Image 1 (cartoon, rainbow, N blue to C red):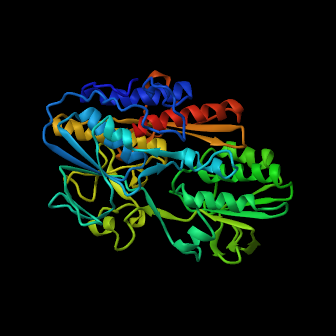
Image 2 (cartoon, rainbow, N blue to C red):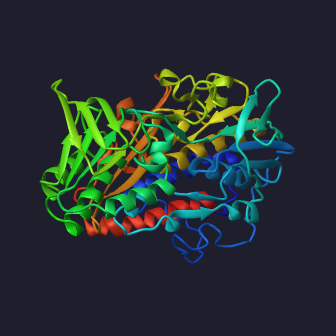
Image 3 (cartoon, one colour):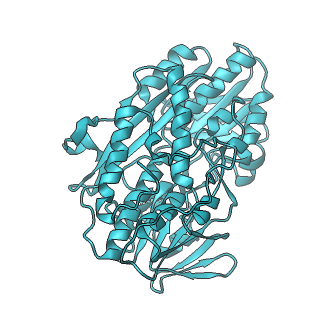
Amino acid sequence: MNTQDNTPAMSRRRIVGLAAGSLAAGWLPLQSWADGDEDDGPGSSNGTRSSTAATLATTAIAGKRVVVVGGGMAGMTAAKYLRLWGGRGVQVTLVEPDAVYTSSIMSNLVLNGSRSVASLQFTRDALTSRYGVIRKAGSIVGIDIAGHRVTLADGAVLPYDRLVLAPGVSFDDAYGLTQADYDTLTPHAWRAGAQTALLRTQIAAMANGDTFVMTIPKAPYRCPPGPYERACVVADFLKTARGPNCRVVVLDENPVIQAERHTFELAFSQIHAGIVQYMPGVSNIAIQAATRLVSYTDQLGTPQSIQARVVNPIVPHRAAGSAPGGWMAQAGLNNGTAGRWANVDVLSYESTAAPGQGIHVIGDASSCGMPKAGHVANQEAKICVDAIVRRLLGIRGDVLPVANSACYSPITASTASWLTAVYQYDPVDARMKVASSGGQTMPGGIPATATEAASISTKNFKDMGTWFTSLMKDTSG
């Protein structure tokens, strides 16, 4: 499938469906979305493969303004496809404070030294040069829902006909820690960048016999398999480079492993046996940043403590702006679980807290029934864009959207596993669900349940690189 496609909007459901089908069938997700240019690879121009303008769809839309807030996986995809599918009559402005995007996908490989943070950085230049997206450096501070305007930190006011919010997440002060602790002493590194590099430095300084402690918050959280993957990558590095007496202690506030359970149970009990100590169902976690003493209550109700050399607290997080006083909270859009997420109508990703107001929330900030993950954000953005384009054209929206969740998980420095699931709209609960859970049958032989790789292998590790490169090409332009 060519990213320069100019198929009419009415066939967009078929595009998303084909994307899901190719994933389930081939296990080289998104490979067919590459546009035929030579593979730049991570760390080069990263998403600026060509300055040649893409062929935009010819539509009857004219004079419409869409503001996209957030330039991550969801926001970049939305901005690109709003122009690609909506045509020149849709002016798209992307609001994002950072000059480059640093992918959290694959960032755990920075911790064992096999990748650099720089190799995960992507520019957004192609969104402008190829698709005509207007980019505005800035951060949102307020939404005038009635006036259809957003206000930025620099005082700029942007009017819109449709607003797409893809702000990502923010991280709570938790376990006795502060934002300053995360940046300097106990990095969560759950947003790739400086904290990832800091955590890598701390791990590299460990010695044989040292203990690495990490925590996992209650679901939902960003990237369900990610913490378990991180435990494996760190354990593999420590036992290989530092010695067999190191320990990786995983304090999970959830009662069981949240994704790829078979894979990670195998990895913890066999591949990294004696190194990883997995402890589910813990509570009352408290961390002393200066001394790195970690205390908690185990699943039997017994108080425990561990002296760690390195502490990696993956702390509870929420939709960015949803904390009390935040811009999303002030606009009343964070009506999800305990006010942490934004509930949406998954046929369009329009906010259910502001129905009919043209405000859509996609990516990790939304609550829709699918995992909070990069590939899912790409899929959500396309469903949202399809709905927006149809509405601007006065065309009936898709009533049965299909999406796919896919990810790879490195288990060692050279092996990986994968997980995929096909999601379909369930009209009873008005949520996206794994197809089988709604009693629906998927066409074309697509699996009806979430599927794990049959084995952990070097081939999966190689395929992981292909998947990542293709996903980023499709997302960033």
